Image (tube, rainbow, N blue to C red; front, side, top):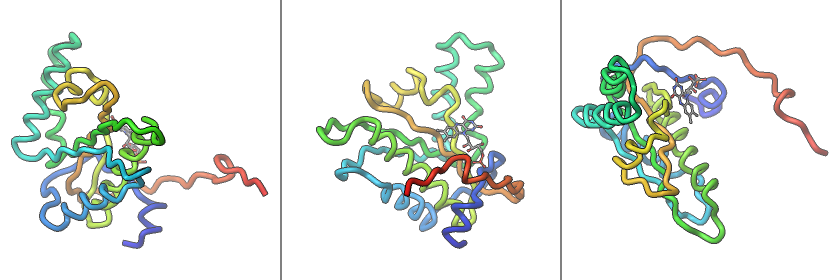
Length: 183
Ligand SMILES: Cc1cc2nc3c(=O)[nH]c(=O)nc-3n(C[C@H](O)[C@H](O)[C@H](O)COP(=O)(O)O)c2cc1C
């Protein structure tokens, strides 16, 4: 797949099934994350690749979070099943590193770039994915489960897998609406 085609026409796919990427394909996805732009090379990232039993472990954390927030029984039951919507979920965490020149927002931005890069690397290799946060990325119980300190953030859960479904082409956006040129 051509890089420009990927960037201009990329799409998320929420309906994902096995297989998940593995071997060199997965390594390429991880390497794509590790080439995210990163001011002063702080590498303020940590990624947890959940698959197999790891998905159930993540589901237990979501379940605990929904119990703690006083959710209805149906929501609690659904919470534990959420990670099973894909054969792999990659949790992306920004581990904030105090630095005189690199504020928190830049470290968050770097981690977000890493998530996008992983999704594009998956697509480039014939896999599909969707970046999700739901209410869980910001939830205290979930953040504690991933050892987040005060300034750490969970940027998202990247659901990755396979899909035979064709994503609908999205209407192109008019660049004039979002870009102005100073010359
Ligand atoms: C930080 C972030 C969090 C997101 N969280 C969710 C989410 O929890 N649930 C969801 O359906 N889509 C979420 N999305 C949007 C999807 O990843 C996706 O971009 C959206 O469904 C539009 O599809 P497209 O990427 O094909 O344009 C999130 C996107 C970002 C950047």
